[in-house]
Image (tube, rainbow, N blue to C red):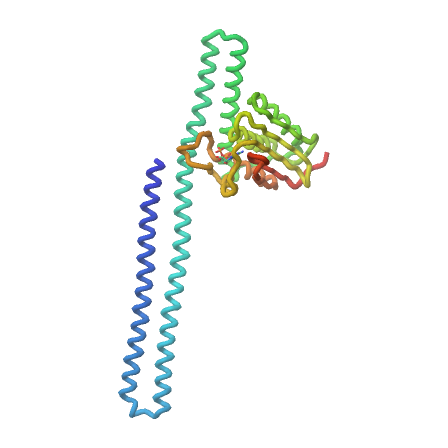
Length: 332
Ligand code: ADP
């Protein structure tokens, strides 16, 4: 499917360039022809004037000659001016169409990747949960094994929940059907609770919290949880299991939320891309992590809808640091 799209894009690109080169060459050719024609007319008219020179006074002859020259000059300006204007219009149109078509193809390709990723991401947790439950039903396992299977099932179910939330909310946010339900929210408590859940889900992961108590702001708690979930899940997904993840909440010119990990980080030239819809770094065929490319797109939308901003920096000595800033805190 993806190969077919790439082939189509290649054919479209070749056709586009052939047509563009043909149109520009035709325009240049016509302009040269018109200029030559203007020259020929000017020469013929000058020769005709020479034939009747004896019948004219010197002043009349010179005036005629000047007139011919002015008309020739005007024709040259007209043809060159029109040629350049049309060339500019063609180039502007060509750049516009080129970008439009390329973006359309890129989006189509990303949507195909997204469809494949979603199918995979929906099926995996369901298959794992089903297998775990069947095992629990069939065998009388000891308590430790039972707990382990239940824990795995819970993790998969929560992942499924996140994925479905991301898909549902992204489609609602897209058509502006999602209505924000802002309420006075204790962001510190919300982050702390979420960290507890996260730690429960991934008991092996080192999660360091630096949460200033009682930081309040007007926010939609459902969306805030989704924001935290996307950023923390990414920190977990894109850093080795031994790496530390830090969550910080402080009141600093408003409210600042920072999530830091010790993973591979994000290359500088990708920093602006990762917030685009369906965007995932790297090539789908060599990518090892699962994902849909929706998490950061939604996160940015949530932050923007709350009047805030989100940015990514390099963590020292390694990894990524996502900083979310909301300009208004609401006192304690
Ligand atoms: P997904 O994780 O589903 O691919 P996201 O929108 O959450 O989609 O992230 C977009 C891309 O940004 C990811 O594919 C990944 O390449 C990169 N990314 C996001 N968070 C991190 C992180 N903490 N460390 C490294 N790369 C990240």
